[in-house]
Image (cartoon, rainbow, N blue to C red; front, side, top):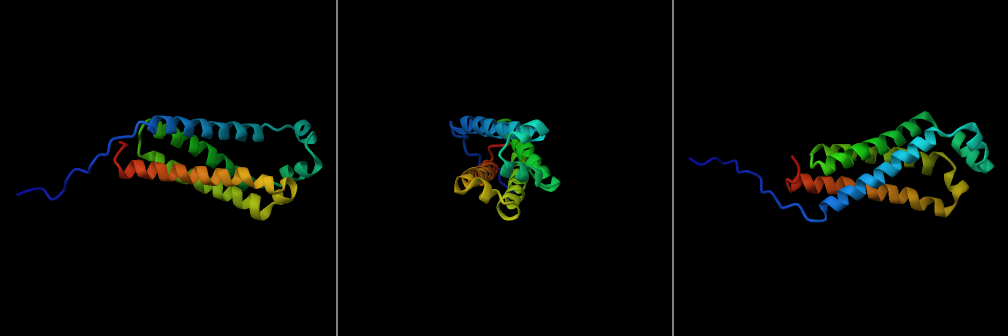
Length: 149
């Protein structure tokens, strides 16, 4: 009798994988730095912002700040897991994506960030969503190709 379960086919990891994983880590560490900078804003620094930005900063609810933290820290951990070729990177990137979506929901639909920053202020949020979704898909591809342990 033959065993009906066959070992999954392992597809060789492409040469560009490590470069992409390092870029993902750098990107997410920049997000961590932005979050830390956001959290360390003193009242003196806030007072140096234009009045409209001061009001925008003061109006950010705790849940949006929490989503920001979830997005960047799970993204950074996902990137480390990606470099280590661990399957958990997918789940971490999904959490990061959810955090980004929640944060951008606040930015686009609740706050008046568009009025403050104008059309140019939509470029970075759209990039955040696109890159985070790309990382989710990248990790999913790695899982489906059995690149990870």
